[in-house]
Length: 333
Image 1 (cartoon, one colour):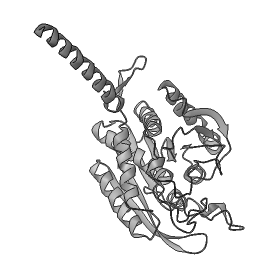
Image 2 (spheres, one colour; image 1 turned 180 degrees about the vertical axis):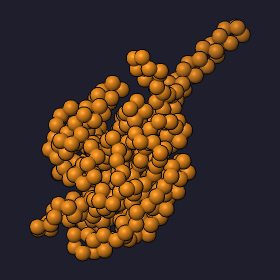
Image 3 (spheres, helix red, strand yellow; image 1 turned 180 degrees about the horizontal axis):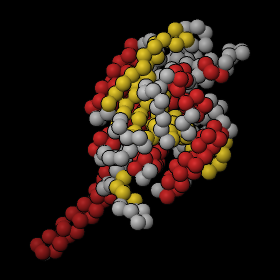
Image 4 (cartoon, helix red, strand yellow; image 1 turned 135 degrees about the vertical axis):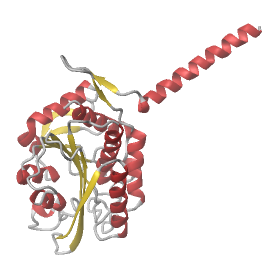
């Protein structure tokens, strides 16, 4: 009987270890191996969704990151210091820009650089400010939103990618991560004759005044609203027009990784976002990974510019699909 008990206990222990291992591997598995013909194996780090979620949460805890607010200032210091902790060379662009209604805002772009001397470079970017008004909501429309997904998610994913770059350096590739400010302070829909260029002021500023003279990257990837539950990322029009080769590379990578349920091959109309100005003004072919939902009020995430864009709107599975895809793209480039 004692022997039988030992056997049973050992069996249960093996089962418990098996399930613990399976659960643990979902987020902390060994680096993915990408084999290439006639080349050495390329190791791609695992994108940690718990870490990315934490980075989004840290931003949201400051409150709405609206320019000129205390939350905006505090988050700026946090992001700048975090990127330094993650091994990047960090610089900033600080200047005043005017909102569509003449309101002066203190813009703060944050630029993090890895391997500054590498000629071969990739640009990764997202905006870090949040909307000053809940203009798509029905309550408290005049109050700012938290912007967990719209702003927070792209930054959170890129911070986790920066953490992986620090842990697993890429010797022959330069990476520049830019957090653009004043992206989301454009004119509401009820403002007549407002210029479409009232949006994305931080990326317009940087594209005309890059942090390095004659800066160029082989291509760029913009992340915007990349954490909504069951999000679909389509081949957006501006991205296809200016960077079709890189659109195909990203979407093919997502398919290879098993994320085709997130990355749809459908082509959708162009939108105004930071990548528009990067493509048009500094001429770096840049792809926008942004949610498209034809059933929502404006074909973005259903919580877009609403107070419901809080941490309940952040889905780790979606962040995993985006973050792992981007990691594979840059590590195998």
